[in-house]
Amino acid sequence: MEQTRSKKRPWLAAILAALAPAFGHLYLRKWLRGLGWLGLTWVSTFFVPDATLEAIVSWQSFAWLDAAPLLAVTALSIFDAYRLAVLNNYLLKLRTTDGETGICPNCGREVDDELAFCQWCAKPLDDTEPTRSGLQ
Image 1 (cartoon, rainbow, N blue to C red):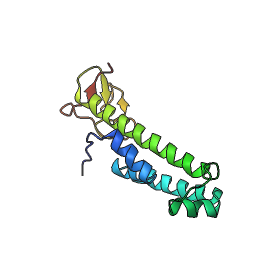
Image 2 (image 1 turned 120 degrees about the vertical axis):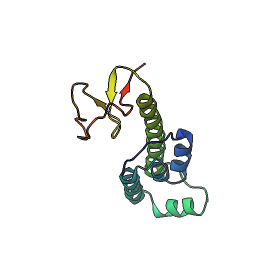
Image 3 (image 1 turned 60 degrees about the vertical axis):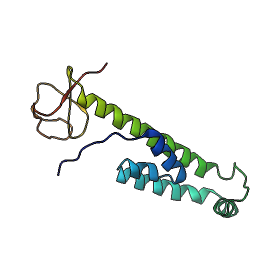
Image 4 (image 1 turned 135 degrees about the vertical axis):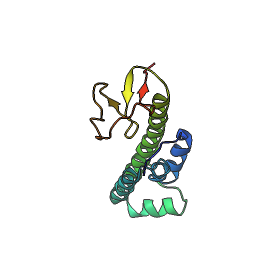
């Protein structure tokens, strides 16, 4: 089964990551990365007092400094989801333009033009697929 990439909306990935740290990554189909963010969020709750967690869940006021670990993980998740969406779109754009540098259609990384396969994922490169792209 061939996996294809589609253009993603970075702002939507960021909003979903703001709702819950893994939602943006799930939108981007980065399953393991999303699971990692969920685990990191769970671990960060051990550093937040119980009273602060209860206040957050019940939408009451809380001390921002007490919730700093949880807020930091959420902010980093938002940034990571946004960055991944932008990178996905950039690689998709590279793959569809013609130029000098080879791009693997499977993993999206630069490949050596002299090889008949991708040195990163070992997938054979076809000249019929749009594997050439230029960095402009």
